[in-house]
Length: 287
Image (cartoon, rainbow, N blue to C red; front, top):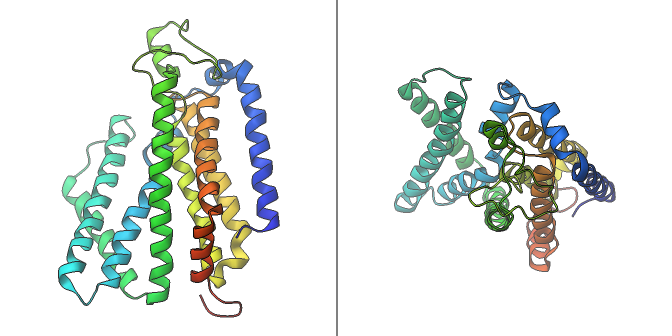
């Protein structure tokens, strides 16, 4: 499972989150005021794409199943179309976000669709060349990711609907900050969903990378790199939500804590450990 170094690293990150929550309890609004840059390209791009890691398991599962049933067209073709459809959905959504925010001008839908089809074909072709053993490992990653995503989104949405905290940019647009509430206080403002941040929680889907060194021997030496990528990606995603004005610091931290808790609890379940042990490569063997 996770190495001792990884456990220490993520424990330090949890301590950092607790510290940031304490800071946010007093300076949430001041931090939001300081970082707010609604026209930031960084913030706009991250808003459009930071949630992708929690969406990609569906595409991965479709590509894997299409490859596993490559000799059975009646089963393979629906999965191929699913990959294309799902990739189109998230790509168009992200591009529309970039257009809405003014970072992109009018986009040629025909060229966009050609690009989407090309990427889908590339993914499906790549998956079809993988060994059955590799496909079964990737199927586990995809299913784990989908279960993780489902639980995480359910929990985050329930807290949003209960807390009802007003977003920073909505307070700014109203020119009235009297509705601002600290993160530890239930706001109770109907229709407001600032706390916790769904985008920050979804960005934690990048943690699925941590499964790869467990399943593939050739990637074991890159465990530190994968851990660093996860922490950096989550950190930048959280920062982008503040820069764009959609969340306060505490919103993003609690979103991350909920999502990470779900991930590590799932990872610690006995039947999950058993599956990982069965699918992981034997020492000294090729991935």
